[in-house]
Image 1 (tube, rainbow, N blue to C red):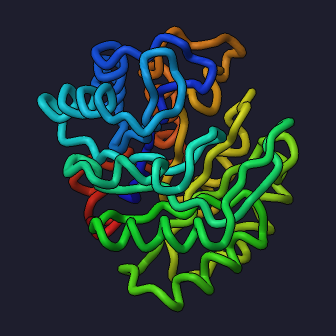
Image 2 (image 1 turned 180 degrees about the horizontal axis):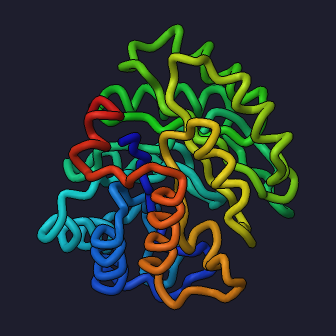
Length: 264
C-alpha cells in the first residue's frame, strides 16, 4: 500500500508557553497517532525564536528517549536572528533534517528575508553537518532558485520540496496555485504540502491525490479540525489526517520508512 509521511509542526508562533516536557509529550502522542516526523523551531519558554539551544536540546532529549520519530529543525521564521544563529540547531546530533528557505517573501505584514548569500550559507551548513534538506517554497521563483542551487551543491537526490500555501502575501491556498507550483517541481523529486491557516482538509486531500509524499500539519499552521472546531492538542489533528490517508487508500509512514524515503 502507498504511504505518505505525516509531519507534525506542534508549536504555534503565538504560543507563549513552550515548555519542553509539554511539547515532547504532545509530540509523542502524535507519533502514536501516525506522525513519522516532527518539525520544530528553536524557541525559548516564552515562544521567542532564539539561538539558545538549552530548551530545544531538552525537548529533543525527551522525545528521543521514547521515540525514533524523524526530527527536523527549522532554520527559518521571522525574527532578528542572523543566518548563523538560525542555523544553530544543525549542530545537534538528534537533528536529522532541516528546512532550507530559498528566497524572500511577504508573510502577512512582515518580510521573510532570505538573501541569496544567506540561502547559500544555510545550504552549505546543512551539507557540512550531514542533515537532509527540506526545501520550503512559497512562490514559483523559489523552485527555480532551489534547482539552480542544487546544481552547484552535492545534495543527495531526490530532494524534498515543501509547497507552502496560505500565508497572506504569498501563494494562496487554492488548487490552481498547488497545481502550478507542483508543475515546476521535477518529476524525479519528492514534494509535500503545508497549508497555513487551514480551515478545511480539501487542499491537503487534493495534494495527496496528486502524489504528495509528505503532509505537514499541526499548531504551527492551523489548530483546526475538519469539524470546524479547534483541537486542544496536536494528536487529534494527526489522527484526523491518518484517517484521511486511509480513506484515500494510503497509510502513514513509520519513522523508519520516512528515513528511507528521505535518504537519511
